[in-house]
View (spheres, rainbow, N blue to C red):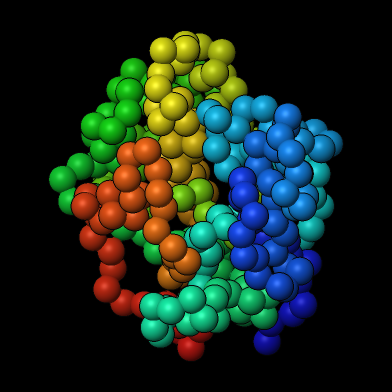
Length: 268
């Protein structure tokens, strides 16, 4: 039987948008520093890196949650992307009803260490070659050097994971705060060191989001190394992502195929 848990899931956003009513979800204005309020909690309060949002993306929200929240469990999702059940129907109401509630998470987390969006397998690439195809190879190579310098016990796990094609995208998760603290300490140690070692002044706006892109890959390494028991949930996409490089989900699907089975709480 599941127990009542103290859970907070930050919802990273940069604009006004529909938010779940349940107070388990905390809408967080990421990259708020120097910008007008949109009525949500700001990531520019307390210990924060809000000014780095153009390079760190939703990670400015994760950093803020790591340093300023003290709940028993912590999660991260996006204003248009959530973890949940398979949505019966493609209308807004069906999607919103499919988003996990606190009760859903209590049942899952009584048996699993971490909840992630369902993993995908890259069709023509490994994690490493896929990153090199879309981004800068030198940065990926430098990440391995940094892990070797700071966390040598992770090098073997890094090499195993990045040379496979299974990947969990979007930096979304829910897990125990103690685990999340450990992950954030490891992750930001690596990313801040990379920031000291490289020059991104000539990167365009898309490539300048380097630390957000790399963290997606690093989460996979950390989970593998920790041997966590994973629950794979459906990623509820409320609407398509419009970016300067086109629809993210369509680009992901171009390179990935996803497991056919859907995750229902009946399986928990």
